[in-house]
Image (cartoon, helix red, strand yellow):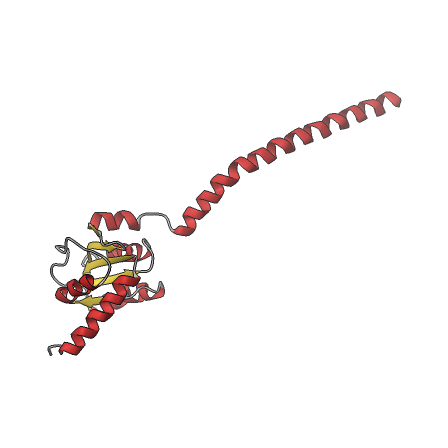
Length: 178
């Protein structure tokens, strides 16, 4: 059944809002996935708070024109497209990439970032392979803490050496006194 004009306008409004709120919109070709597989992907994305929508390319192009994202190249919008709207730059790409590894029927077409740049499928895979934000923060903290902990060990070694030397002198004096 064909959509009415009101339904299409509502779909465009929802897509416009989703594109405006997302930092990365991952575009996928879902053909070849059966209903349980698509439901599994949706569930994985839902756990991370990432909406996943199937939309007509004409409506997507209209929605993109209504946002502040100026997308010059819409050639990635060819064939049926399902879009995962990520609230950050990496999480949606990571979930879609991990799912595509186990389900080769899901094809990553590309992505649109927060300023409207169109990323290739290779760019999306590269984003998906980046460490998570928590891992990056842990690496930064570890890098900052390493010199400090080394400095503390050096200072502790000097103090320990002094204590051992004083103990050795005290032991020697006690042996001489005996």
